[in-house]
Amino acid sequence: AAAVYYSDVVGSVPPSARVLDCACGTGQLAVGLASLGLDVVAADASDGMVRRTEKAADEQGVSLRALRASWDELPDHLEDSRFDLVFCVGNSLGHAEGAAGRLAALQAMSRLLKPGGRLVLHSRNWELVRSAGSRVDVRDRLVRRNDRDAVVSYYWQIAQRWEQEHFLEIVVAQIEPDGAVRSCSERLSIWPYRYEDLVVQLRSVGLRVESTTFDPESDGYLVVASRD
Image 1: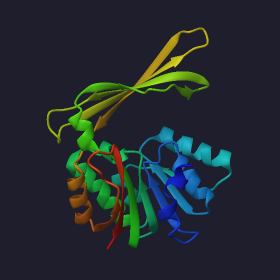
Image 2: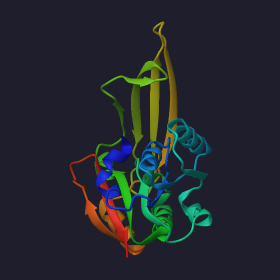
Image 3: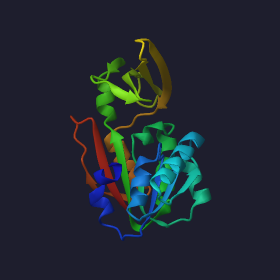
């Protein structure tokens, strides 16, 4: 299902194109791309996420290469100018540490693209996130986690300035059959960025924006940028 969301860009490359999904998370997108016959590398800085991606690929009977690497480590593992497409989705770029970390990440992605290859980047609208201030957002519907109903809440800790570290704590409150509530949480560091600053950084690493869905009033956007 994740791959279907990007069907337009995927449909524009050869059937056996080389594709990198960096910050692949649980591997849903990478496995979906591999199931289309694409030559997929899935990378993540988390060993746990790499293992989950490998398990998902095995369960679906698809072939891909999974490796543990942060963005700046990718060129140590992979050849320059190798990929037709690089995906950086799931709001992951906000976890790069500040403007310097974000630039290093984009530089690595650009290096790995063939000339004419494209970066597909999905991002939160951080302007909107910051404008709403520190807050708790509670999902308005139950979700299923481990065959249990659960309530998911997001606690945003918004710093005073853009360049400061922000935090997002995700709390999952799982409802047990006896009515008890079991909670677990994860605290993430975030360095937000303005859309206009992202475009400038893309340009500085040789990536030209082909298409964008950025809207000041929309929660997220998709940018497709091609390497010169």
